[in-house]
Image (cartoon, rainbow, N blue to C red):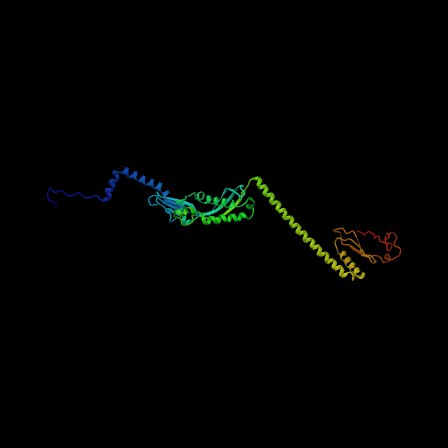
Length: 344
């Protein structure tokens, strides 16, 4: 029981009730704070969520903690960073770009050479590449060095040599130089590895003054014509050698069989030739003589019907009179018969 004259202590309200009362008293300020936080999130989220597409790498730049991160890079995917930092993307896939370079040949002739370069960045050194060179590394680092090496090597040759196999040699030399000394100017700045890897160098074309190009083309044409004539001479020489060997073979054969050829042998060969002609498609009429001569062949039109082999009446082969109407043989020995027309 409380002592007389002492008032009791007031009861304390719960914390949530006091917060609610404070919120009702400062409702406008609370609403303004919520809207500010929401707007800040809407603005900051695009700068905090970074999407790195396929074939790319990211380099992080810290605003308050040392700048560019050179010892690490970010691979593909979705990355979260602070909105005040920056993520720079680099294409790590193989690149192919062509440039025209003004060069001078060994004889002082101006030329325009079209050179294509295939290259890619070094993923492990992309941070140093971003810090020392930047996104335009191809225009700052790759193409100026390619042009320098190209002018150096092309100046050792004439335009005619560039149209020949020396072009491949020049390409190989430029590529070798780029792989060995590419980016050498940056090695004194703490870079111990290559920033860009050059895969290949291709000389796609050489543009000369029109009169020089015409002269070179005529020279090449004449050179090919000389080679053609050399080939013709060699071919005719081989042909003459072949004919000489063939003639020697025929001569040797004739000398070997000259004393052994008899009338019976010639008659046998004539019979064999007659049998072959009787079965040929291009012979039409074959008349066999009864004397010592070979057969007579008439109307050997191409594609004619297979011939009939007609024997000659033995009575015509002697000195007897020929049938009426038969033409006389110019030799006076035997008449040539006139065959009756065949019925269709």
